[in-house]
Length: 289
Image (cartoon, rainbow, N blue to C red; front, side, top):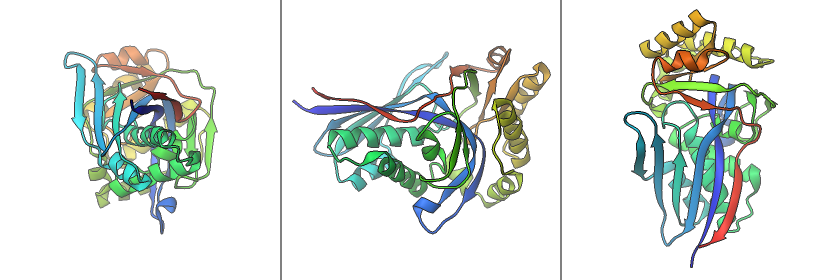
C-alpha cells in the first residue's frame, strides 16, 4: 500500500507586468498587477520508483472532455531538485497557455504535495522559492508564483519569490473570461521587440480597487501591441456595453467583470466564470492508499 498527497494552488491573471533581470533566480522575475483566481490546479502526488507527470485538462464546449498530456519539464525539474521521485497527476478546468498562471499553479501544488508526502519540511517560503526558480529556468512565467502564494488583487512592487507585494482581499466581484487558443509564454518572453514595448507600456504604482486595476490593465495591453484581432473585437464589445475588460497576460483571451460581462463574452466563445481568491496554495491532505 502506497501513500499519496493532494494540494491545490489558485491561478493568476496578470493585468500589467514588467520583466526584471537579476543576478539570481530570487532577484529575477517581474513586477506588476494581477488577480489571484479561485480556479487553478490540483496536484495528486503518489510514491513511485521514478518520476512521471500526467496533466489533465477538462475542456468545456463542443470540443470539451478530458484532454491528457504526459510530461512536464518544470514539475520534473522541481522533483529532481527536491531529491524525490513521484507519480504526479495535475488537474485543471481551465485551458493551458491562456494567461491563467497554470504553470505556476501546477508547480506550487505539486511541490506542496510532494513536500508533505516525503516529510521534507520545506515550509511555504522554500516552496515558493523553488517554484519560482522552475518558472525562470523554463521561461514559463515571471511573477505568477509570487502572486499565487496569497490571494486577492495583487500589486508586485519588487520581483522574485520574496518580493514586496500589496494585496487587496475580500473582493466579491466575479471574473469572466473567454479565450481563443494558447500563446506560448516562452516564445513571447524571448522576443526582444515585445519586451521593449512592454517596458515602455508599464506604469508603476498600485491600483486602489478593481475598476482602476482594469483601467490600468487595458491601457497596458493596448500599448504593448499584443492585442490580437479576436481579443480586440471582444474588448470593443465590452467598451460598447460599459464593461471593464482587458487581455489576459500572457494569453490570447479576455477577462472582464461587472454587469453584462458574462453576456457580452458569451457572444464570442465559451465563458469561464471564477471568483477572486483570498488565499494562496494549500495542502489538502496525505493518505494511505
